[in-house]
Image 1 (spheres, rainbow, N blue to C red):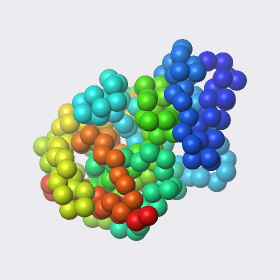
Image 2 (cartoon, one colour):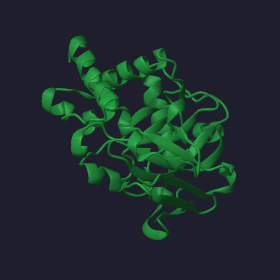
Image 3 (cartoon, rainbow, N blue to C red):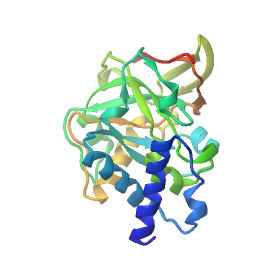
Image 4 (tube, rainbow, N blue to C red):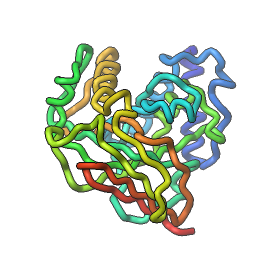
Length: 262
């Protein structure tokens, strides 16, 4: 894609945020959009937001589980940026209207105690950089109509980011086996899905390693204090006004996201 097309695609996504109206897939309008093109479109939006005063508070990795890859018909992870405005207090009523097509994913969130910069980051490096983990519910969203996305679409759309609710009980990594950690996902008190940490590239730590190395190839790094979401343990679940979603992780605890009634 030429620079003008990158700007135009980014503008279409920014308009979708502003109007609340999803757009057709970018890969329909730009069938030759590459992964690099998609990240360029994402970068234009991030610069627009930060120029307006938003602050980058972390990153997310998406499409790390086989369930999510099957659900969206892709076969490779992606990453996006977490802004300060995306962090939602636990148990506060979340207005459904702030999203276009929200769905929820249970994840463990890494909070970094020191910077992590690739390339060449190993699992040991990643473990050493994590200060603690928190239970999390990511609210993913899509500016693409009906979630009709291919990999470049979701990358361009900031990895389908929407918001995140973090739990408040920090747990150190040395007290956990993330690969074997089980998760229960409840909606309105009813169990709707289960999973284990191993669904995320074998272990959520592997997603952190992948992210640090991919960012490093572009001269970027993860900073101390940043939150990293490594990917969903289950398939994504649609939510409606009035829903209460709770994820419970073995050894980590639980987190609840409550969506305001109509």
